Amino acid sequence: MKDENAFEQQLFSITTIIESTVTIDGIVYSSQGSGFYYTEQSPTEENTTGPQWYRLDKFWLVTNRHVVVSKIDGKENLPDSFTFCFRENVNGEIRWKPISLSKDEVSNVLKLHKNSNVDVAVLDVSQFVSDIIKEHCQLKEKPGLCLPSSLSNKNLPENQPLTIDVTSDIIVASYPKGFYDKCNKFPIVKSGIIASGWELEFNGEPMFQIDAQLFPGSSGGLVISKPTNIAFFDERVHYSKYKQFVFLGIYSGEYIWREKIKIDGKEIEIERSYGLGNVWYSYLVPQIISDGVKFNM
Image (cartoon, rainbow, N blue to C red; front, side):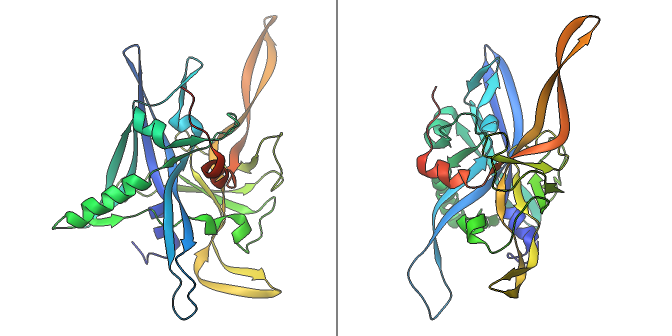
């Protein structure tokens, strides 16, 4: 991989595939989705003479509510097994390093929005990160462990000078079911534009629409602005050696609407799509971290 500050390397360390299983009445239901890591950071101390160091207070895994809490026969269920991954480089081969959580562990670390319609979930994986670092340090022959430390509160729109608006270019990084770079464990990246009013609630929900045709398994994907080296603020053009982006939100599937039609005199309801995608605003992540609720079993 490239320099750790290169955009490709950031995507590499931020994103993960997610797999889960639920067993009901002896039937095993399995699903796959996407997720990404979000870190809370704060300066360790005031330092004006050298590089600024930041303390990583928490590591969170962000995805959709429906990726963690599967709805089967109209009822939401916590997974019996929930797996996300880090990456490690073993003699030049990139491998997934899976971390599997039990139902009780998921229940302990999961936070959801108070409004159950908000399809966003965050899991506090700080302890799992700490355990893996300790385990890694004890190995005599250490593989190259890739820690999820790139995306943070510094990437939120209010902390970036980049301008976002309707028609702004965006990209979605995710793991469509059955299709991604399995050798390098690299996500599929698709482009699009913001298709509804930015910072407005679409149909009364804290989401916006994107014009980007995606595929099953992309749920929970990371949505960011198109990376750029150039920004205009303080009435001047500014250049960054490494491409910068804004964390915009979390993708959660196509926008579906239902239409009633008559066939042979019988009224039925069918699903329609405009090819648009639902993206829940990024500000929901720190909101859920601060004021989220546990899953009510």
